[in-house]
Image 1 (cartoon, rainbow, N blue to C red):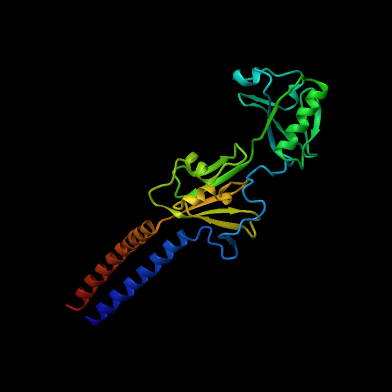
Image 2 (tube, rainbow, N blue to C red; image 1 turned 30 degrees about the vertical axis):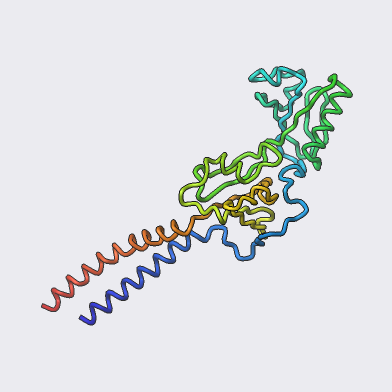
Length: 265
C-alpha cells in the first residue's frame, strides 16, 4: 500500500510540474527581461505617430491631386501622359514606389528626391513642382501606404494593419481589429517599438480614462501591440492544462494499480 501511495505522489508531482511548465511557456511571449519598460516618462518624440517618419527607399507613396475631380469621384482615375512609369490607379489616387536612389518617378515632372523627407515635406515639394511646371493651383495629397503595425494576443482579428493617418492611436487600432476578446487584460496592453535587439516596451492601462490623452498610445510604424490574458483566463487555462495532463497520468496510474493487484494476489 505504501508503494501505491508513493507511486501516486510521484505521478501527480510530474503531472503538475509539466503542466505548469507547459502553460508558462505560452505566457512568455514578449517577456524579454532586457527590454526597456516605459511606465511614465514620455520622450520628446512621443505622440507624433508617423508625422515625423522620414521617407526611405522602397516606400510606397499614394499621390493624388485634389483639384482634379477624376481623382475623387472616379473609381480608377484617368492616367495622365507618362503615368506608365510605375503608378497604380485606385480611388485614393495612384501609388508610386521610391527607388533605391531615394527618388520617386512621377508623371510629367519626372524624378523627385523624397528620401529623408517627412510626408508633409514631400507633399509640399511635389505640389510646388507640379505648380511650377504643369498644373494651375494643384492641391497634392500624399500618403505613405506601407506603414503598418502588428497586433497580437487577445484581439478578435490579429494581424498587420496599415497606418492610414498620421496620429492613429491604440484605441482606434483595437477597434479596427474587432475589439478585445473576453479573455483580454485591458490593464496591461503592451506597445513594443524600436530596435528589435533592445526594444522599448510601454504598458498601457485602458481602464484609466486619462490613458485616452496619453501621447504614448499614438502608434508608430512597425509597432507591435500585444494584448495579454487576464488573470481569470490564465487561471482557467492552468486548470484546463492541469486537467488534460492529469487525465493520461490517471490512466497510467490505474493501469499500474491493476498490474500491482494481479502481482500481489
